Image 1 (tube, rainbow, N blue to C red):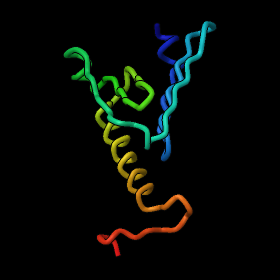
Image 2 (image 1 turned 60 degrees about the vertical axis):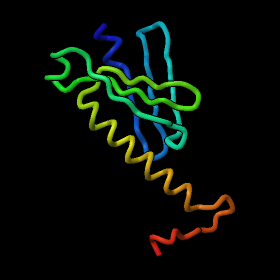
Image 3 (image 1 turned 135 degrees about the vertical axis):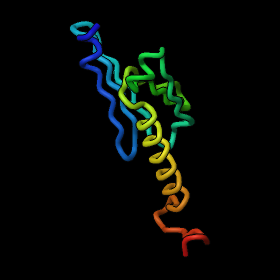
Length: 109
């Protein structure tokens, strides 16, 4: 069990979420989603001890499924980071038009 948990990687970039789960000598599972396709992010904490030690799961729901990131320290912090980057990327996509010109929002002129 420790070997399975120790080689799982979760990456958050400024454009996507990547979850890479490997089971020693059996298989690899890699899931990724652009941040503009993430619909919601949920934090789930387990029992009393997991809450006291600040461990839990982060689940990102996308258009095509879910990305599960389990047994993480400080899951609320990761959730807030994902939500902040989702807001930033969605704001960026509303300002930049498909042909590359910048459309200024009235609030930010």
